[in-house]
Image 1 (cartoon, rainbow, N blue to C red):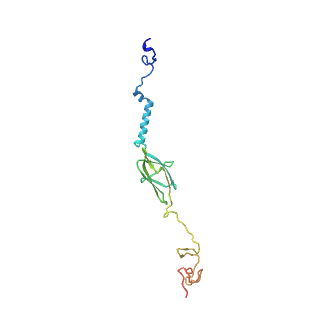
Image 2 (image 1 turned 180 degrees about the horizontal axis):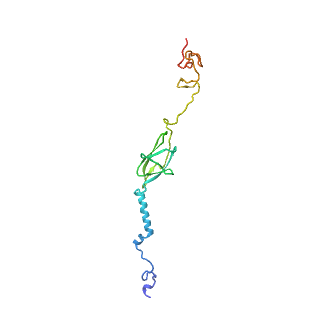
Image 3 (image 1 turned 90 degrees about the vertical axis):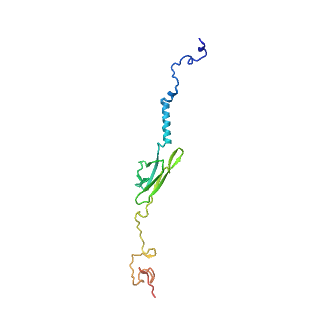
Length: 184
């Protein structure tokens, strides 16, 4: 036996059999490592360059059938009630329906760490009825009730020539439709 064989391990003596040499380029290009690098680059692209530039904004609007406008254009949320809006700029959301007062919500694009976010992150709007175009209101006045100091009793006829006849005292404001006369 020679000196090379004494005390040395078999893999060190002679050529390597059955083992590939570790080539750093082959390791870098192996399937597993390559997929890891590609995933990292894609994730970096989404977070830094704005590849994922839209944000889900849940929307709840009452009454049903209200129209939603974003930056002046009518939009329809998806069936789940979500709008997908660009995060890189602020938006003006207008909700309106005939017979109701319109409401406006401003979504501001804010810096949140490395990514931009829209705030508020959700919209909930309940429109109030418009007082000028709402449903008509019917007011029933009781007999004898007055409206702004005027005699509103229209159920009992009065004698204008003789204010003493009717419900009121002679000469009183209540006695005649056009006003009472003072008796001397």
